[in-house]
Image 1 (cartoon, rainbow, N blue to C red):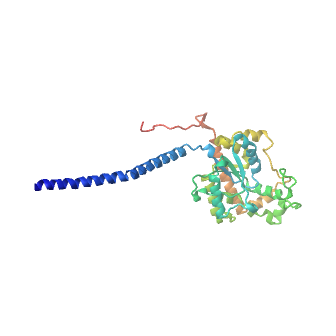
Image 2: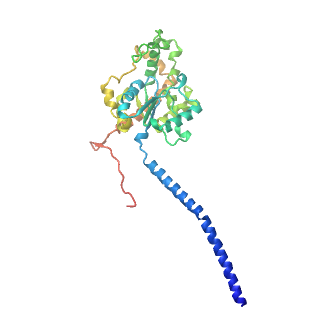
Image 3: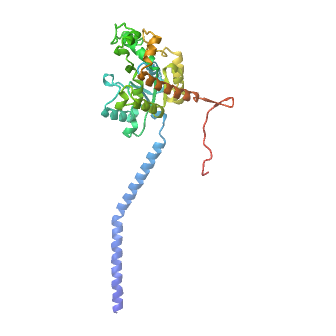
Length: 341
């Protein structure tokens, strides 16, 4: 009898534990169900985001920045883009900085980087303006724009700018320039050592490629030259030279047709190929050239120009065809030996 009572007692205890466990399971099941449901939704959402990222259209999100250097033929080039933007369905935007400054404040650097990156309604886009190179990677932006530019022989650029300030150009012939009325020639200016023809005025192409660091804007700074070279090779898609504008446009059209399709034909067959020619310009004498080229500033600016020219020629030779065993072949690439099968 005692054994039966003991067994019943154990049975009742186990039954109570079982009922209590069942109660806990059913009372908490909705929580687990919702948790699993939310996890499934989150997983599905992440997969969807991953799919969207993998499906991003490069061409339709293309952003190109042309931080144009004054007196390098930039007006002629950028007006080709304005003529073709409607046909090619992209946007062209001019970057206008207060008082024609070439650098941005720290706050504006970040705002500019965020704006260009996130302004999807303006993509694809070509931005242009007289602004120094800005490194987007230091702001942790999700994407970086493509940079392009043109450089010009430093003395030619300085002489052109000198006379431009005095006589203007054929682009806006009625606009009075700040040195209008000054008839002193560039040769006379160099002979009299006037500030307008000081070789320090050539220090512009280096800082435009160097960027927003303080050292970039110190004339004759060796670090600035080296940084400009590094940026030119590593952070610019293409840098052409004013003297070979046609080849520069040709290479852009071949490599970035989403924006530059038809640009070469328009350049060759329209009136936009030589805009903004200085109204009156005298070539410097051999003595003036000799005096200027003794300057360390000219030597550094010319070193950057020759460096850019070498890089451009290297890329242009590879633009379409390669020479192999006496034959012209179209360069292609493909994948092979893909494993596992």
